[in-house]
Image 1 (cartoon, rainbow, N blue to C red):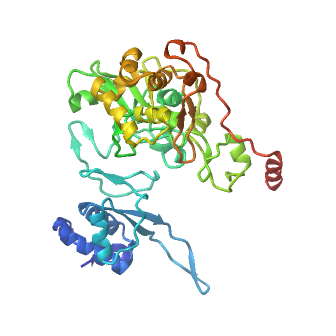
Image 2: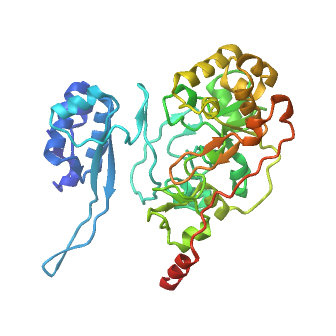
Image 3: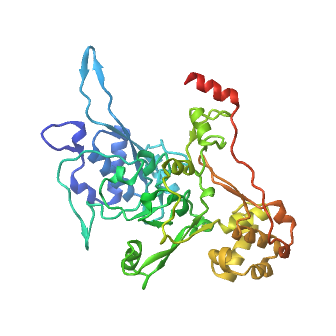
Length: 443
């Protein structure tokens, strides 16, 4: 099935004949099964790794490869030469049919249903970028040109969730220049845990366009469209959108809208096990170990940006940023029921039928019109959202933030809620002095 390319016939040269990539998916499935049973999803061939990725995706699942770098080894007193990394695959399936097909063929080592290494919408696969690395390269580079754009020269680029401090750009690098050298970057994608106000704390970003179109992280309808951009363009075409992103011909972005960054999963520094939130200085003193449960503390987007911040100024042409919270979650908060319950869905669907869209309800529709349709209780919560009167418990460590309706708003009548002041409590845990001192002694 496989052949070795080149004079040096080794495992790291193993690959499928090129024409095998054009076989029908069902035949490629048999190739994948045979390779997995034979090699257990492990290879030292980078080419074979990429070929198996293609075959898996053609059959509706994903094989995600983790890279295990070689270590020096000894045989007796002699040093063994180890030069090629090992790639270990994991399989993610997206429906029971594919999972059953693999299991029938003896591939039973599959992740649990709630663990995915990407997702599939029926047309496209979406794969997370785990890390960005630089590697020296000396060889032929093939250029695919579309109009004046070139794929191998970074004329423009977008960075998804670029501020997440343990997976994205600013985990590996402290600046765009450090990451990309002199290559031109035109725009950044902010992700769920950052907004334009946070991103503008880094002066190098001031010349860039911001996009707020993070993935929904869920197929549930109430999460769709919670991040979007509003363009000033002449027509809804790719070329017009491109001009707006590049700020050409009078086209531009006039609004970024997205989840309140405090509701993101990694906004504050927090324990990834019990989600206790820590100030950055406390997390460092505790050596990134939670004092309460021993879990690993993960640095939040908020703290990573503060580490990199070098300005309080804001570019004059930056469009406003509209903070959003899912309407269904606001309704669920008031009714004290799950987002997916019939009670919440019926109110949510009624509002959308009457007023057209979730954004219209959250932002534009007069409060009195909403109250006339669904009564005062939920309407007061929508008013509190519009006026930034909701209590926001920030997310961190992998847990989304939460919203709560203040007691002052609950008790007030709709006509009396103007001017209500809300008290906000400190969300951070304060480590015991003894624990901090013991750590300092060890350090």
